[in-house]
Amino acid sequence: MKGEQSGVKSSPENTVKEMRQQIDPTERKLFQYFEYMTSSQIRSLFCRMSALHKGGTLKPPSPGLELVDDINKDLDDIIEQELEQEEVQNLIQPLSRSMIRNSS
View (cartoon, rainbow, N blue to C red):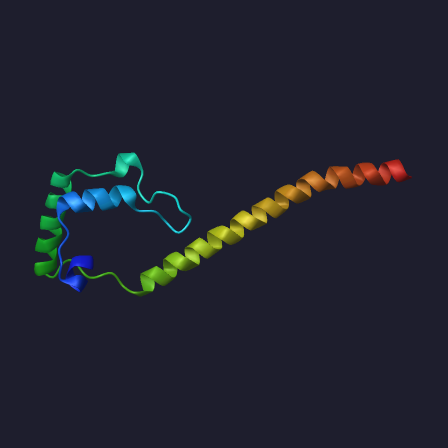
């Protein structure tokens, strides 16, 4: 976790601010307004996470998960491109047929 790596723990108030400012690689907000948490909710979450971590129940995230996220994003991009190409083909086909008929 970020605080464990840096040695500086984030306050719940700062976490609330950061949460509202986070953006993903496509420049969209990472959290929607209905996902925002209050500082007391963050404080409670930090307490539960700390207790789970000390009890050995909470495991650090696997480094491989970032790779999986990257692969999923790439797949989403590929699917989006294929859908756009299919849409273009669907628009072009009627025009092509019309041009062929008119040239005959």
